[in-house]
Length: 209
Picture 1 (cartoon, rainbow, N blue to C red):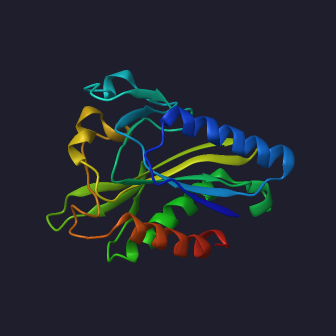
Picture 2 (picture 1 turned 120 degrees about the horizontal axis):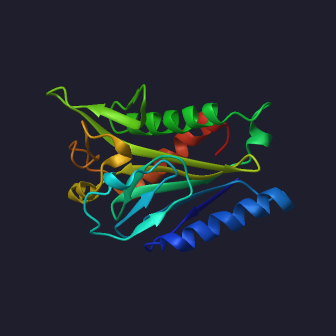
């Protein structure tokens, strides 16, 4: 198991190429699984279920992601974790639903370290928080692609991004709810704090650090 942290913003196409190469190495050569922490410059991605009318304002570049899901935003202040795991080695029977549940659980347990209650919602991908006035807002997105039972893409947790940038899309096709971040919830956490929590909770969910 390896961990990689990129300090500078990573080009999106370069990230896709890196994941492709790493998955091939894991498949062909038995390379190590990898979790990659990074940030992108402001951009939108379109998953395999993305609808053109959910792109409201093309203020940033739009990329075909190749993952499941619809439109999402990536940008500075958002911790992205691209996860490349060989499910054949980690599950008796490879199970994508179980893997996605574990990604959700990873985020929920990470948020708990900052006193934030993250919740699942049936029919809505990602992790949600309930504000004091009852509003439900999305704090983390999940998008997954699997090749040879090896995972690609992963999670995007809003630490302190510019939330107005989400206004150019209907995030994940969900119109009736907004987005939030740790900073918007009053949590003064650095990216290093979030990384430490993610690494700590990874072991409890996936079985190794």
